[in-house]
Image 1 (cartoon, rainbow over the protein chains, first blue to last red):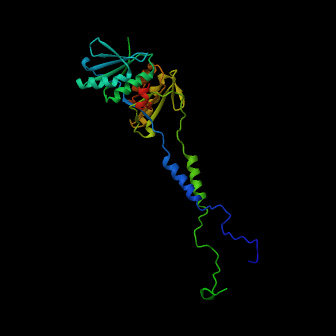
Image 2: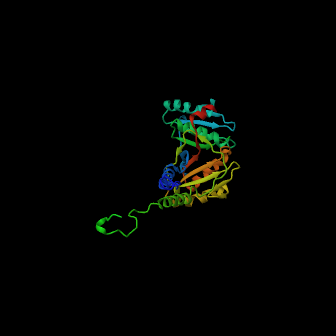
Image 3: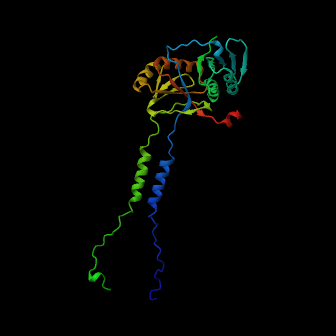
Length: 141
Length: 149
């Protein structure tokens, strides 16, 4: 060969840019697919209408009194017997009670000074146990 | 040079291919456009500690039919970035409830340690305003964390 310093390699000295579009589309599609709009979660309940007041027989009510310390006092209907439980035990209790009386209503009475989280814990336990008839009240007396 | 195409040499040097070098620019433009225009939430959040619940369900309602009411630990009520006295809540909620064609769901975002008296007052205000569908917003709690507690 005549010229000694001639380059023999035919590899291009540019960075290949033809796949850049693929990378960009990959990113675009990745973000489109993985974007999750935060959906709100919570414990749903329907409040009674203001005029709505129904008399319920005491034997169909399970009173759950939430004290500021977080303990739950359970009273059945008219009986004065008080059982003290933790919020986590309510789920099992409700399943037992509702098996005996399917018309049972849970009356959750929270002490005015009790932190909201204890009421949420009790409501959570009741809803986990499948309770639908729940009344939220404030504890007076 | 050998004679091709019957002696006629093509004079046009224009490429027959669609230019694809700008495709990447278009893709990046789209990417940046969507990144910039995506708005996640219109109102700002109040500093609260969320309560946790195992039975927490997703609110199955359109975003425009959900009204967020924030209840802070000191009992202050915030709706749409404004603080309201407790007694004004029914007046705020009632027209919104009517405008939503009775579909409005209230998502109560209350601090886990707020005294229950405020939650009760708020419920009575909501009843007065006619909005009876209420959700106690909470984080989803896994059974594992509950057992550890």
